[in-house]
Image: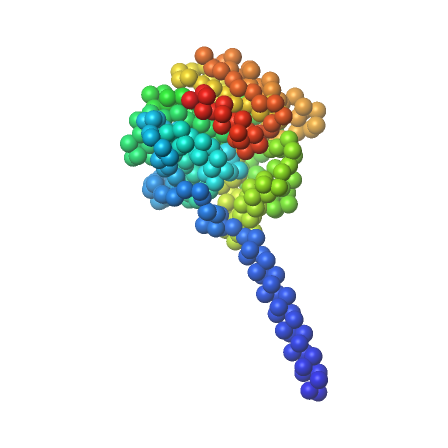
Length: 333
């Protein structure tokens, strides 16, 4: 009897150890939907916003020049699957040359509130303009990557007097996705977003963002994948679906000819990004998202625009070819 009791106790302790360690593993892989667990390279501040009867806060970094100021500011707009944390090398390059750099996490992304609102590029642009006004910044060069390129374009269209230069790094929205990607409702997209896992995100990043996968890219997966383990992930997934609808339903491609500010495109020529790509057949995919063509087509639509193209580079030049990108960026500024 005594030996049986010891055996049961031993089994219970073993099971407790396994459960506790499994729980610890899950917690270690979990990242909150507002990235409290992710340390940014520079101090994060918050700008309060009130909209649709709710109070939100917009996270941002405001980094002063690392040496004598040149009196100029660059604002960095992140892509849909990212936030301010992936701009570190660009910030360092700019501040080392005397630029002030402002890096917002857009509402719905990064450390900012995951607001359940109507998402609009016009509204996001307005909030960014209000942030710059609060910071006393009257003019700035706006660099937008991916979705941030659509937002930067809308910002330049709305606030040309504030936009010193428009800098677009592999922006999405260079074609009207509505014309060839099947429509899905926000609710349907939400159900798709709920299925995301760290493994599916890694596969997507490997096949969609980079020409050659490197170990240092795992940090991007750790952050995006860790969020899917959070108990609050359903809210983040709904925001992701709402911003997908924003991109799909609010094209800027037809207004490119209205841009009145100096514009430069930075294009990784191997990029083949299409919003809603999984909804297309292989043959349909081959007809769209060809950035080696889209870049040239786009500068033809924007008065006076220039293009800088990068060989053997995909969707994120500022990470995949960091040195080459920052040299080109600084030269353009």
